Every structure is written in C-alpha cells, then in structure tokens.
Image (cartoon, rainbow over all chains, first blue to last red; front, side, top):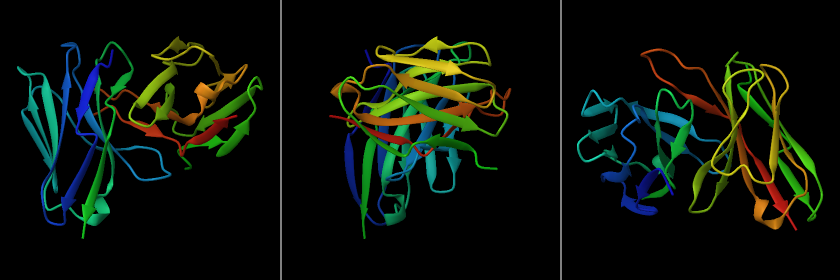
Length: 112
Length: 115
C-alpha cells in the first residue's frame, strides 16, 4: 500500500505555462512534505518543502500548496522552462519515523 | 566535499550471483538509506540506518542485507541476485535539523541488471 499517491504520471507543458503535480496521503502523523527533482542519470535533489503549519510556500517559480484537511499537497511550477524538464517526486515524513515515503514520480516535459 | 558517493555506477550480474553496493558520505550525517527506483514505482526504501550500529527494514527488504560499517559507510548486499532486483539503487544520507528542514542527500545511483 503506497503511503503517498502522486499524479499525474507524466505531464507535458508548453514553455511559459504552469505545471501542477498533485499528491495525497493518509497518515496524519506525517509532518514534513518535501518535493524532490531528478534529472536523467542523477540522484534526486531537494527542491522545496513545507510543514503543515502553513498552507503555501513559495521559492522563486516553485510553490507548494498544502491542504491539511484534505490531506493533499501540490507543486506548482510557474512560467515553466525547458530546463525544468525532469522527474518530480513528492514525499512525506513523520518526525518519529526517521524515514521518507515517496510518491511514484511525475515526468515533466516542458516543450520550447 | 564529495557528498554521497556510490560504487559501482553500473553492474551486470547473472542470476544467483552475489554483490555488494558501496555507499559513503562525508557530511557527518547520522542517518543513511538505501532505495531502489523502478519505473512507475518511485523510490522505495529497502533498508535504513538511523545511526551508527543500527539498521532497520524498509518497504522492500527481501533479498537484501545491509551493513553500517561506520558513520560514513553503508553497504547493501545481494546474496543471490534475481532478475526482479534489476533496478537503479540510490544511497542517501540525512541529518535531522530541528525546525529548519530534513533534507536527504542522494548519491548518483548504481544501475544494476540481473540476467
């Protein structure tokens, strides 16, 4: 049973458009929600993260929206660029678990 | 400061062979992890080590063993490789920083094929 469900599996966006990736979780013990970005042939790297005491966090063109009651969170990439083409993973962690649960990943392709 | 390093980068095994994947980190992190990445499955935790001297099973531990050799090194062993273990393996490390954020740092991965 997957602890974190991610959609869509793949996404094609035109340059300058908005990319939106969604994740949902069930375990209310989760208290940290990071997004990782992975380029082909590389390991994932932390992109942005949020804790459930805020509903939104923005870093440059990347925004996380968090809905605690719905147990959902999403990544928005504004003004998407071809350089954003990568696989994105959402994840969740609980402080007392000391381990992350990752979503299945979304392959984003931004067309020039 | 190399971060997390993994060896080898690529490996081809025959069914039944054994091998050890090596991982080392130079960030003085307490926690280390082994994941496997398969298409459509995301990253699945195999084993992790919260601190030197401790190891725990993750989501998919069957067919694997681990050793936390010291604070820097965490190895993953396949005793009798099976085609179902064909995957890309990532090692990661992290340090829990109160309030700030918990970031896992990943190595470059080992691409393993079992024939």
